[in-house]
Length: 521
Image (cartoon, rainbow, N blue to C red):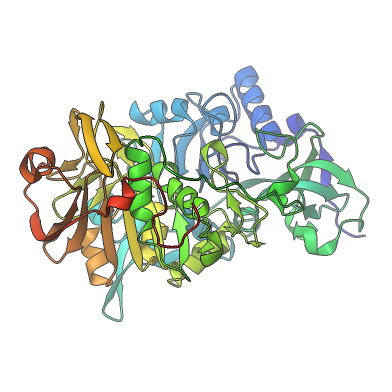
């Protein structure tokens, strides 16, 4: 008799999870592939009975809505004992549990977590990689431990053929929780109407290889064999339980958006014309960072300010000149920002995030534009611990490890900074009260030493000055026209950088009209 998956409701599926179990979850912020009905059932059971308790929860990307859903379902004292996460900001309640040592908190690179789940499921001896060397996940700098409660070593430094690597130890997963748009009665899971593929296969494999179970939430259940086989991302032998949830939405933003699956191509945006009103720091930084992108490049951008580089390229009709690759798996298309960051409308291709990270490791990326919360005199960057708050690196470490050129985007100072532009010049209307360029970063998410050893080009773009990474640390290379070097730049650094052959930031960055000759704007 052929094996079939059990068709259970969410509460019955949650009852299958024992105390102390290790759970691996897939998902990405904004409700992307989040099996939230199963998560909610686990939460209900714990509140009603106190079980399951003492769970280990593993997730590569941020999961939740900054409210009650996603990872927030597990943020109850006693429910989770340990959390190993790539990105933490979608659950402030879980961040608080970490800050107060109520859980053992770890952060590892998102791509590392996905690949480690795959390797663990295949019963290999963990993941050996250079990703993370010199950063806070390197055991010489903390090993990814975020608080005092985290005492077990998950990462070790090894040497092979005269080169240093990090070995991320295998994870013994008991329960994998994944999601798809449809499942058949046998358990085949289709992601045809999902906005991304993420690491569903890696998460499921991690439990199967450890003798655990795979719980799949799906919007509908179909007859066996009725699903289009190329849409089946997870075959039945990897699925033990199917939970049907007719109320499942594609994302928290909409029940279903065909543009996010490539089934609908939105009309092209209309480019702005003529002079532009005064810009703030974010627009200025994005425009200057966009100058680092040349035709033919494979491009990646991060969440927040750096994502606006894509807006600049699009407004100039430059998106056809480049290939945009986002860590969640999209290639090409019109990138989403905000809560749905990581998705793309009408993408050219959609691959699993685990595969995308593998592609990044091949040096696929010619350039990536990412944020910077802190920068130190050596060129190290911190984005993973801000004002003492656990954030995690997300895909940041994986991406910078593989990119040929890294462009960091951020303001020179923070908290209160206000700037404007007029007549092709920058005006500082109010200075920020917090320095972002400091003698030493609070946590090293980017290692300048490793980047130099790997021959990477690194640029740091602010609204008023541009720096590059040199052999001895930061080198100031550009300044906005009309600003005073000492008063407007050097006085706001926590160190004295080397000043190179100082150039003026191109006036076009601050003026209306195109950045590139002949470009549409």
